[in-house]
Image (cartoon, rainbow, N blue to C red; front, side):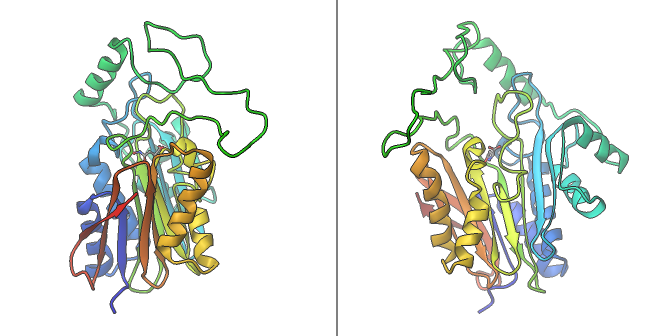
Length: 324
Ligand code: SD4
C-alpha cells in the first residue's frame, strides 16, 4: 500500500492539493514545503473568497489574514494573526517558524516583520470585498458578532442576546450560540501532509469571519485549534466556527485521541463531539491524518463535508464526502 506520501486538505480545494502533492511527490520536497505551497495556492486563488485577500471584510471593510504552519518533527510552529496588507500569510507564518524563536506574530507588527523580510505591502481590498462591505453597511438588518449591547437599528437587527443567567451547567442548559458560519461562510484551508521521508506537517490559511469585529482572530493561527502535528502520532486541521473551536482545541484533541489508539475518523468524531456537547449548533469540520498515512474526517452542522486527498494509491487528487 502506498499510503505515504499523502496530502489532505479541507474542502474541494483541489488545486491546493495538487500543488502540495507536486511539491512533495514530484519535487521530493518536505511536508512543510508542501503545506506552504498548498495553502499559498488557495491564497492566490482566493479559494471560495474565504482564503487570501479580498474576502471577509471586517466591520471597517478591511481584510486581515490568519495562518499557521507546524512542523510535526520539531514541534516548531510559525503563525500570523490579523495580518494586514500582506497577501501571503502562510509564507509569513513559515518565516516566523524558520527565522524566529517566536510562534505567533499579530497585526501591524506582523506586517512590519513581513516587510522587513521583503514581503510586499499592498491593500487586501478588492472591488468585490468593498462592495460586500458597503452592502453590509447599508443594509440595516445584517448579522454581526456583538452580544449584549444596546441594539442600533440603523446598524443591524439587534445584537445577539447571550444567556448570562446560566450559573450551573446541566444537560440541555448550555449557552446558546448563534453561528454565523454556514455552507457558504467557513472555508478555511487546513492542510496536513506526510512527505516521502515520513515527515509530517500541518497548516492553515484564512481571512476569518465576515464582518468580524476588527482585531478578531480565529482558531486558524492557534496551535492545537486550527491545526496540530506531532510526528510520533499524526496531524489534524480544522475549519468552521473558529470562535467556538478555539475554546476546545479540536486539532490537538484529535491527535491526542489517536495517541490513545483511536482511528483518524474516530479521533475526528471525538474532537467534534466534544464541541457539540457544549454548543449543539456548532458548525465545523476536521481532517485527521495518522503518521502511517491513514486518514479520516468528521463534521457537524453541515449536510456533509468534502475534503481533498492525494496519495499514490488514489493516483490523483480525490474529493471525499463525509456525512455530518
Ligand atoms: C475562523 N475557522 O476564522 C475560521 C473560519 C473558517 O472559512 O473556517 N472560515 O473562524
